[in-house]
Amino acid sequence: MHKEILTLKSERNEIVKFEVLLDQVNEKFGLEDEKFINLKIACSEALINAIVHGNKESHHKKVYTEILYNSDQIMVRIIDEGAGFILSNVPDPTSEDNLLKESGRGIFIIKSLVDNFICNSTETGTEFVLKCYKQKDPV
Image 1 (cartoon, one colour):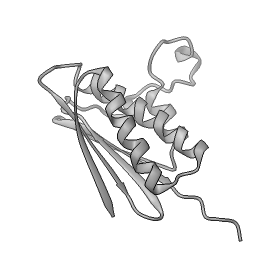
Image 2 (cartoon, one colour):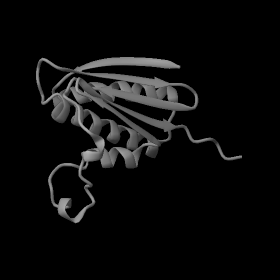
Image 3 (cartoon, one colour):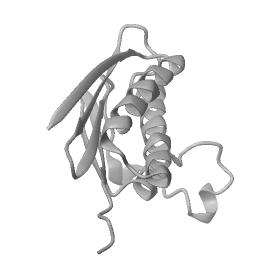
């Protein structure tokens, strides 16, 4: 498994650094275009979540990222230094009461765009794991 690591400041403008790295990795990995665009959007949502909600945009906290890939899959880990949260307590953004809210859709979007999503959250931070599998060539 190949691994790329990047540490980001808790600033939204840092996301572009991760996107450049992800582009470079995908040049080697070769995820098909639509799936790669979905992964980029999901990673952007996860990074915004880590920077804004996890680290509260604190200049003293970092966001740690890893991109791991082999011939079959690409996995992205995004870890913040926030206080954590309980995933089951996140309101359903498709509920009628939440449809007009300006935020609260990030995790829903992430789950819908990647093949596998895992959230590990403790009082010292949250880890998001996003996986996409390379589609096999038709026989």
